[in-house]
Length: 165
Image 1 (cartoon, rainbow, N blue to C red):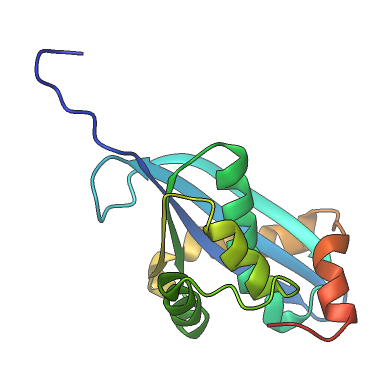
Image 2 (cartoon, helix red, strand yellow):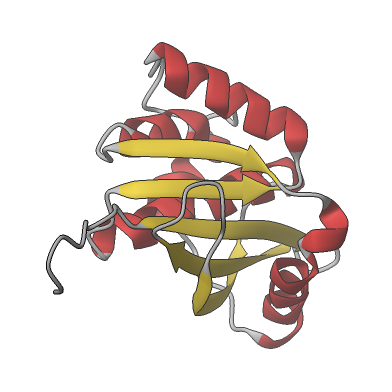
């Protein structure tokens, strides 16, 4: 450290996407992790994640990718998080509920996301244009095609009980 250097907080940004194979009922998710101490920027590349899951409905893929980003960030001890998705309707809903401090129902995928988000110092749910999210999309497609899918029983029970949102 030199003289009067100021430590800036580090923001970790996940770019997320999901893909679904209807024939095999497999959801692939792709996550790109970046970090920076400059607000409003995604920063330098840190890691890529490509994972496949079975048993998630087609409409749950992108939300599940957001959940996985939060889980990974929590495991790594990150405090400031930005999650960027090209699914704007979902993102706006999460952003508004998070800002309002609303965690309606922990027994849904959305409830799991909002509950976990409360454990961070700050989470921003941000939009990314689809054309700028191609790397995450490619990882999601790769997962569908090449990975052995995993069952997440803690998430699967929501869909079995009909509580998708």
